[in-house]
Image (tube, rainbow, N blue to C red; front, top):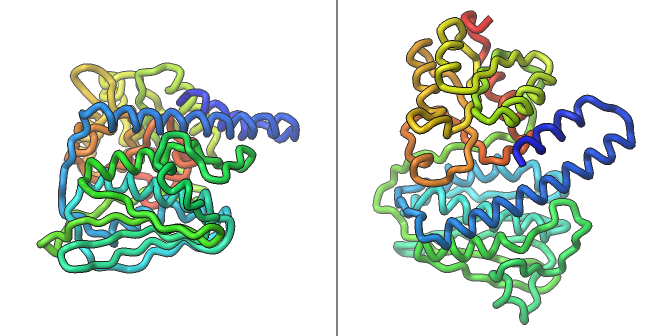
Length: 352
């Protein structure tokens, strides 16, 4: 899936022939549906396996809201919807990654089923608890389906022709994550007027919380350039990623297939950006290469870690300024993130 997504995106950049672009665009949408289905099925399998460890921390809700806004602003604008996040000073006690996953699914669902109007996310406090709610002006849910919407593959008013059509798994994932977080999802809805999904979380006794990393913004910063070190031990993925990046004006890409190859490159090159797979061999990971490159150069080289691993080993890496993208990587998100990181980190002299 990773190679197919990247090659499809690269092909779209190399042709202006209308019929070819039409077929490639249709292929891209099919690949997107396959990727979303795979991601959702893997999420459900992981959540049901009993291997997910809940790591509760103090979470600043406002920081989480800012990250969610960066993720969904573009999708909401594409549909002509207003996406609103009410400012809040609340700090809750929860697992930040699982809470983000739950809210991502609720917001994506709200945008999908709202044709006009708005999607609003707010946090209100009552005593020792905070209620986070996602409110939409969408199609609403028939009363006789309120008990079915959390079932796998159940969809309200499904239109398979709609772009970004749902798979009927988002709320099934939400239910499982809520159970892990020891809360429940409350739903109120009025047919034709919209729905509200909300959860209750304990407020933290502390007013200080760890910031939530922001996802890549959807707006491109414009044409930028720089030297990229790309590392992946899968030849097909490495070739496809290299091809996609090389088609971008100003991108210079050097590849490595192993940690040893990467360390050899780093003896003569200080890259402006590192993109690496997480699992490279049994002894070393992409994180080890990032640390090594930063120690050699004496500066924080921005880095992107591509991985399908969502376990604690990735969530607790203890390394700053690291941007994670989940496999199969969306080519548009990858290019946008690369452009943003290169734009905010001018090319070093050693990289030239």
